[in-house]
Amino acid sequence: MTTIDSLLLHLPAFTPSTEVAEVIAFLDEQDYSHLPIVDADQRWMGNLASALLYDADEAQTLATLLYQAEPFFVKTTDGLAKIADTFIQNKCNLLPVVDEDQHLLGQLPKAALMVYLQESTFLTETGTTVIIETNTVACSFANITQIVESNNNKLLGILVLSTHENKTQLLLRLTQKNIETIIYDLRRFDFTIISQHDEDLHQNKLMDHSNYLNKFLNI
Image 1 (cartoon, rainbow, N blue to C red):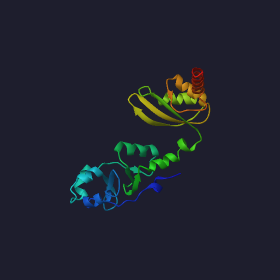
Image 2 (cartoon, rainbow, N blue to C red):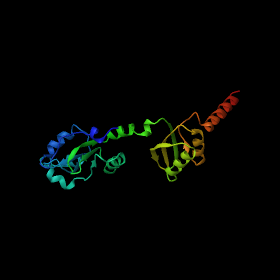
Image 3 (cartoon, rainbow, N blue to C red):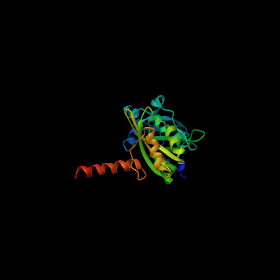
Image 4 (cartoon, rainbow, N blue to C red):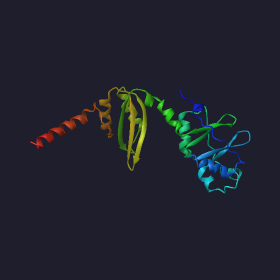
């Protein structure tokens, strides 16, 4: 399994004595939301936002901006959930990774999350994908899980695809058992089935009726 250490970037280390102009030159070649600042012993001190740096006087040093540093980081022992939350909560695309003594080990890019996702059972285990739509207020992961498990299936994961006004679309990853009855029960609890499935007898019957009606009208 991929570890954080194998995904780390080792970017230039910027210290309080670094001039803003030097950092701007680096950012002009990159697309990072924040950059970590370290002391002379490579201990992490905080993160400065790129937007802040572009607005600063280029003749200044980073020391003059440290009071605006943002205090977020992860450790090599942190799991995927903690890493994802840190990215989202801080609206960043680069995370400093530190050890127990706050030494900077490297930086983790947001794209690394895809590596973890590709190795998860959500994508690696053989299964079926079902896309559903439901009322946003009434949306309940507990209800979905109960419907799936009551049909002797296993929910491998749920992904929120979109939320627009009062509708939410979800992607469900399931094992391949009893898909027909799961789809039936989802409809019974007011979930709309967006994806198409060979096992969906209800949809197939509607299509058969529609084809018959079209044939009748064309006689």
